[in-house]
Amino acid sequence: MSTDIVRATPVATNLPDMVRYAEHLAKADMLPKGFAGRPANVLYAMEYGRTLGITPLAALTGIHVIEGKPSASSGLIGALVRQAGHKLRVKGDGRTATAQIIRADDPEWTYECTWDLERAEQAGLCQIKNGKPWARDRNGKPTAWEKYPAAMLKARAITEVARDACEDVLFGLHYTPEELGAYVDQDGNPVDAPVQPLRSVPSESVTVQDVAADSQQAAEDAAHTTDASVVRQIWQAAGNAGLLEVPVQTPLGSMSLREYLVARGGQLTAAGPVDAEIVEDEAGPTQPPASTLGSGTAGAAATAPVAGSPTRDRDAALDALRGAAIAAGVADTIEADFLQSYGVDISRAELSQLAEMAEILRRAAA
Image (cartoon, rainbow, N blue to C red; front, side, top):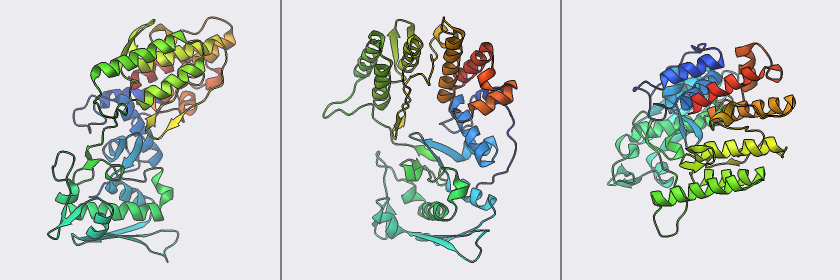
């Protein structure tokens, strides 16, 4: 369960090139399921990999996003520890596994973590039946804890000791997909992840018609309100219910609920300034379309500056760009990436440059 990683400069060094590279990579049928046909996810992994100092392919094969949270295989976590110059030692006998780390800056101390089947049983990961681990998925099939207990024990020991000893090298990759609830194979790669329900229903199932009706009602509510804060509330509720990607009919045409709420929020923001806020939810990204998110991706409304003063035109273009950056997962680096790509600070860029970058990011997030 080892993952070789190499520090390397990414193939593309500026954002437009990285987006195009991500679009091409996403077409490969050899990518993990979470990245195939999803250029925004590919771009996210590439950016994360750049933070870690690893190649794009190492990031795509080693980083997995489970319910909005980045995770990594124990092999990648161990490789990051060794890449930082620390010693990692792992041993096991099938029923127990011990991982040790000796930091390069503190060679006199040894961090150690041990996992055994009894501990796994206490954690609810498996049961011990006739002296052997027993664990089944929701379909009654054996999970990795039943089929590959030695590998799973080593993975748990590695990640736990790494969190204890080397928090500084993980950059948020604290857990494996299995620790976040995914079913995994012998190498720790997710083969299935728990599906977040669209909404809570006491005793009846959710039908396609229910979802469509709820989404259409949310779009109509957004169309009739003149208060951008109400649109933000609709966005949050729709995001928590898993409705943002459902197609709806709107005054701007047929589009996803996400696209319309972003566009509607942009319209109301342009009509008058409102306080911006971003709602963070553990269940996933639910950033509401306020002044910080711009006019979204709905046809001409996505790129055309709002008529009015030059200041308002620029504000609208900046809002659209930042909204596209959030959707593409590069909000934290957009200013630096824009400067590198166009050679001008984002605050002094021309409207055409802002619109061009926003369009590139929207294509990546589509």
